[in-house]
Every structure is written in C-alpha cells, then in structure tokens.
Image 1 (spheres, helix red, strand yellow):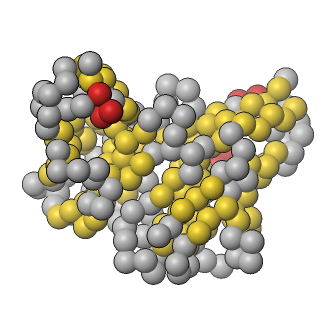
Image 2 (cartoon, each protein chain N blue to C red; image 1 turned 45 degrees about the horizontal axis):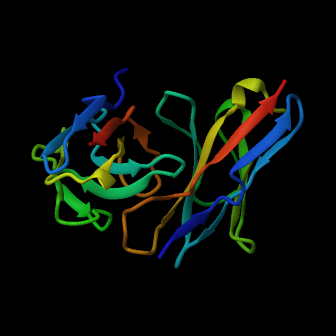
Length: 114
Length: 115
C-alpha cells in the first residue's frame, strides 16, 4: 500500500523567502507529526495533529513556523522568512491514533537555505 | 520534561555476534518506548515498542528490547548480528501521563556489523 509521501524531496531557497512543505499521510491515519532532523541528530518534534487540530505545537521553534491540516489528511508546513539555520531534513509521520501507536515516516524534504 | 539518551554514537560488532544498542530515558510518568531504524537513503522504520506487560518485547528482523523500570533503560538487542543490520538506530519515548503528545527521539546510534 501507499506510504507517507512528502513533496518536494529537495528544496533550495534563499534566505528570507517563504517555503511550503507538503505531507500526504497514510489513508485513514488520524495522527500526523512533523519533525526536523539535522545532520547527526535525531528527529526533533515540531507539531502533532489529531484530525484537523494541532494537539501539540510545543516544538515549533518560533512564529515563523506554522502548519495546517485543514481536512484532516494532507498537511502543509509553512516557514516564513527562512534563515540559514532552518536548513535540515523535515520529516512527516502518521499513525492510526495517538499514544501507543507506532509512526510511519515519509522520506523527508531536504531544505537548504542559502 | 521527557528525554532519551543513547550514550554510544557508534557500536561495532562482528557478524554472528550478539549486539546491544543502549537507551535510557526520563519521564514524569510511565513511558511508551519505541525503537526505529534508519537505513541509508531510506525513511525511519518502526522496529518495536513497549507499552505495558512483559518487559521483553520482540520486533521486526529478529530484534528485541528489554524494558527495565528501575534502571530506566530500554536496550535493543539481537542474538546474532547480520551485515544487513548496519544502520542508524533511534530510541524514542512518549510520556503517557505528561499531557503532551510529542515523541522525543534520541540522537541515534550507528550500528556497524563487520563481516
């Protein structure tokens, strides 16, 4: 079956620009997570959705980062006024529910801010 | 706050030998614990999880992990390593009483199985 997909796979942008990263979760998965992974580090939690609502956005580093999931399926991570420090691989994961359920990860979007 | 520590950046083991990848955690309440594996140029994949019950849990590819509450550890083990097990392994924790939904990952341990 289809797994979690993320687009684009690579994104190069200039400092100060706006970017959108898209995640298509596994059909029927109500929980969706965004993570950021820098080289040599583990995934760093950004935000968690249960359905359409952001149940926990405590990991968003500042107000330049925002994410939506308007219909409870596809999610978009939006970064305004990008900075070089935003360069990382952005991972999306989905799961059947919350709590004990394991997450299924997408391949990630590699963001490079020049 | 919840946290995970993977004290070894890299573990080297000879093929056919048993392997252990260490993980310790810190939570306010009771934990859900997970192991994930990341192969080169591939996404993170779930290996196994501990929720409750038997402290020894078995997962994919012959891996198992032992939950030790007194030592707050959840070490990953395999009786006989394969070269194909070489990958990056991540331990993760969720505090089920913390009121948070976040999952915290460790920094990862690179496993190198030597033929």
